[in-house]
Image (cartoon, rainbow, N blue to C red):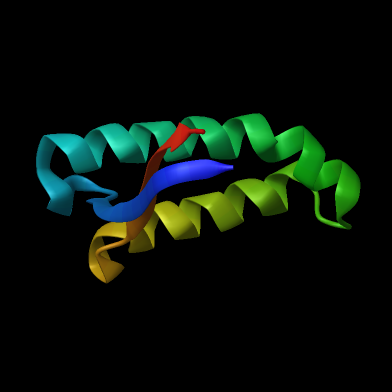
Length: 79
């Protein structure tokens, strides 16, 4: 059982529109997309080239759509 449980989130920008933090998150998302390539290609009918084009289009839209990620923060005390 957990006492004093609290949860909240912070909306974190992704892309240059979010300044230094946004650029860091964009770098992280690019690395995640690159690391996901083998799993994505092996579990879909798309080729590596098609996946690359999909990721490129997503990266182009990040600043236009002002993308963000909600980061959840939870804490509590164990009884």
